[in-house]
Image (cartoon, rainbow, N blue to C red):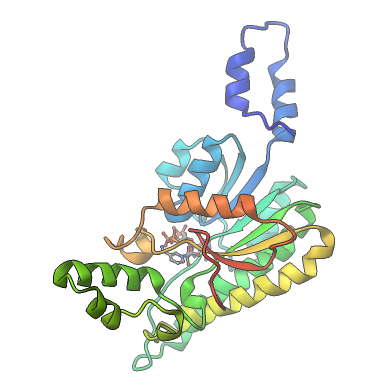
Length: 287
Ligand SMILES: NC(=O)c1ccc[n+]([C@@H]2O[C@H](COP(=O)([O-])OP(=O)(O)OC[C@H]3O[C@@H](n4cnc5c(N)ncnc54)[C@H](OP(=O)(O)O)[C@@H]3O)[C@@H](O)[C@H]2O)c1
């Protein structure tokens, strides 16, 4: 199937006076792949919108409050949607008016650091609401807009892996140590890069970690339940990314790089590999 970019086709066809462009628009829009992305006003969600729009896809950006950057992308925007609100989700369903969605990207989330010393139960509950329950509820609600061949994406985190293998961090530390000392053996001893040695050692972050594990489990169940409907599900970790969630950490990769990898994983997703927990760089992560 050929997917046409409306802007490009409009430009190309403008010389043909007897062609009704509204009709062309209806046809091209029908043929375009439609992505719905939550948390679209900033960070990774915004970058998804930018790159998907650029490659000629139809983008529906869902957010609580629209940002100037999102407005400038000229995509369809559904604003005023708090994903924890049943009323807002029903409102979104109504606004979509039966529109077909090819790829649903559940991207929105919150990260609040909760430690054992300061166990803020309300924060843990809220992180479950936003990070685990809201994506499942949205997916269930929009199932009627999905169709055979559609894909569902759950943006989770490596922090939702019980084993939490922080390879990126270890490799980076290894390289720095090696650079500083020139001693590869010592660097390897100090920063072992073998899977057995680097299980979850950082602990903490109770609400975020617990809610993301729950999201991973929801993804696995969805992949089983929706396979007979020919709908594939991916559970994705974007890498450590410079966004507001991470205080734009200098150790992170850019949203551009992360989203390039995430889109590659989404393109790669099919019924054979449904239910996989992937890093944006293609690595398969352990539960
Ligand atoms: N950045 C990283 O290094 C990293 C690492 C691992 C996983 N992730 C995951 O990647 C995804 C995107 O993260 P990010 O770094 O782009 O985060 P971000 O910059 O903090 O953006 C989070 C987005 O979620 C939206 N959101 C939060 N609560 C919401 C609610 N109740 N209803 C509707 N929208 C809500 C925010 O909207 P408002 O602007 O209205 O608050 C914002 O658009 C998340 O699932 C995150 O857990 C990120």
